[in-house]
Amino acid sequence: MERRNKQHGGFALAGGLLCALALASCQQGTPYTDVTVADATPVTLEAVGAEFDPHFFAQNLTRNDGAKPEDWQHVVRRVKAMELQKFRVMALPQWYEPVNDNDDPHATDPSRFTFDSPEMQSLYKVLDLAQEQGMEVCIVVWGCPVSVSLLDPAYAHVKTSFMADPAKKDVWITGPTDYDEWAENYAALITHLVDDRHYTCVKEITPMNEPDGGPLLTSTEYIKMAKVLDARFKKDGIRDRVRFNLSDNTDTRTFYLKDCAEHLAEVADVFNSHTYIFGYDTPNDTIARWERNNVEISARAGKRHLVGEFGSNQTVGATRQRDIDRYERGVLMTRLALNFLNAGAAGISYWSLIDQYYGRDADYQQMQQLGLWKYVKEAYRTDSTYDRIKEDYEVRPQYHAYALLSRFVKPGSAIHPIDLHDEFAIGTAFRDTAGKWTYVFANATDSAKSLAVVNPPVGGNFAIYRYEEQSLPKDDRMLAPATHTDAKDGKLPVEIAPHSVVLCRQQ
Image (tube, rainbow, N blue to C red; front, side, top):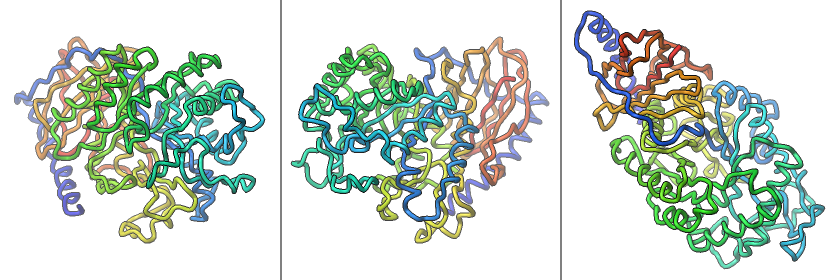
């Protein structure tokens, strides 16, 4: 891994020289390759977001790893700087209903809910941040855990969710055994968030995370559950307050999405899928074909499709990906994102924002380490990467690449593919609601690209931002423009180094 990174660093340095030479040659009239901004996809962008599950205060500060409450400012500052647009946020039913309120799911007893629990306070911190930033939030109640450990000592006796399926073995979570109880629990949560706490950021729900995995529920059972949930939200007068973002299936298990699209067209507002099957050797066509199929399935039900989670295929269990610290991962994540959007996706959400523990008693192997930045250095002491970590909450290279997307590619933007005629290089043009254009390119090849973006009659000056290994900030500062370039006669000259990302923002 280190050898490849060093090689890519050489490519980046050589790419910088090639860019300078290519720019000079362009100025001298040497031909360069025209690439055309295509017609827009049928959808506008909803959001560039990330998973941010609410365990910072509840599960991490309570571990005695050295994390402090004031460390939250790193999260706040970076989310603001990145201008993230959406959080996908986990919730679990025992956080607010550790014990069944009563035996009648159609008659809720609010006094039995624990909306002031430590776990809920941790959730409110995430929602407060989203609210302050004008972001949107999708609340995902993941399912019903078979093993429960709550922070409030008054509920130390609660060892499992009362809705969990005891017949399921060797799993940590199941689907609900009673859909009416599940619907009561979920509706009570959303009512509390949107009516009692007035969170206007809560715009969407997803019932159960990756229900096809295990499975938590077969597609037949999931469809039944979703219909019960829809009816309960309507009964409680909150159905029009949130969108139902359904399916949440994984990778190639498109049968689940097909079943949901066929039978939940009148319930769903949007569908989403997750993917961790694409990597450095995956050509653009394979990535785009996967999402195009999802988009077509969803469109048959009259709905949009989102990529609700994504990462690389370098997975080691559920908590690690071998390439997480590589510079090149930033190029790959951008290439994946552009392929999804070019293929018709309406939005993307990266897994995940930060490294963190999901349980205060979890061992090191259970720490989620797929974040845009790390946790406190001390937590990695047993890891081979420990000596290379310079500081607590150190950002990974991909942080800078993903921040380019979230800073400049905004909700409501039209999405225009740019075909570079290369299976490992890709481009997309975005026209925002103010009429400004942003061009984004990801070049995963060993060759520099000298392009002229053909988009008449767009002219004027463009700020050019570069994600290149040798010029990344050593800290969490946002990338600044490397240069400025003028578009003339409807063409913008762009030089793209090998293994790099370039973003051109119209001024």
